Length: 128
Image 1 (tube, rainbow, N blue to C red):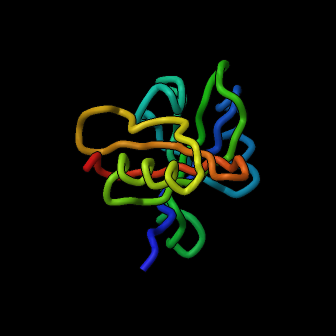
Image 2 (image 1 turned 120 degrees about the vertical axis):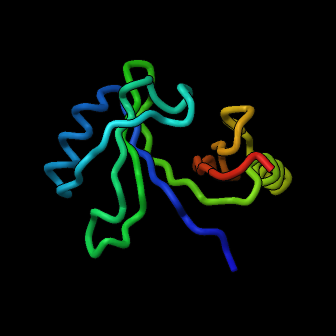
């Protein structure tokens, strides 16, 4: 069985404007939080969307954040049993590690890699 998509992110230079946009477009409600690492979003600028509060209640959790120095992107995260192992596998198959694992200690981490075509994908889960 394959690994599931567990989280999405929409990142940009003006996260409050993005949140207003997606709230108006899709009716999303946000709760304040922080990204796992400051390399994903400025502190205080990352807000979560609870997938249980979207559609029929089976949506994917997500976040909208970023800040002045963050390039726009849309990203999804796949839940993996070991973030470091997943990043190594991505590299061995022709991808390139871009981030992570972050943070470097603790129980939960994220990582990002680009696939052979340059698409950026995230992985999330334990460090190992």
